[in-house]
Length: 293
Image (cartoon, rainbow, N blue to C red; front, side):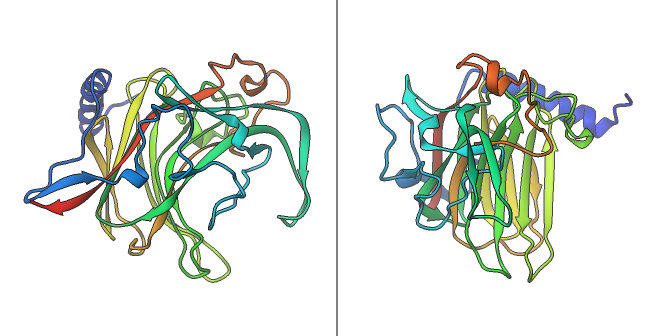
């Protein structure tokens, strides 16, 4: 495949920062005249024995604003979460018996597998830096680190800091050929009966598959029109939202199913892999705000 100069330069940079990220933690970018202060209500090292329920909600229907239960065929459930050895973990797997949701959607939804979603109680907005060090599971399910809110019919926005899956299959949609080795970010002005959906999105390729080692994904919400993204502490690209993003959003981490990477009915990693391979690990989530020196 032909490699253009810009792509080659980007590949060299990413290989270099990949080596750096393997040995150290990333840090927020420097801002002249200001310093970063950690927002404790949105940060967690996950060193305790239990999930801090004053910060995080893991009940898919227990949040004060958001109550999505997951994209069929994978149900969000709080039982998928655990904490230990300094990590928050989300285990995927096959449900003991299918669950059918008859009330929430236009048609019945059948859930055969499980994942999980973590949501912050505190909201956040422009002027913050967000960082998560995590290792993806090795199954057909995936997800990542993102922000969203209920919003209104005219104005509902979402920022995906990173998302990926653990394994591709023969049924994976062709455009998603690289989603097991990717940093993909979205700035989505969601569509509804009131407005048409529009977005800005970019992606890049880390040195290894997302499930092979920990990566540190960062996002600086510099302004309503400038979203800067980082991998292992190094800048990789900027998104320019289609409308100004200045609302307060809920911070989230989810592992879910995607219709463009369908889970095989027989022999899926979700159903057959070891617990270790079915588990996504989150080392930490850290959020910072700027303050004057």
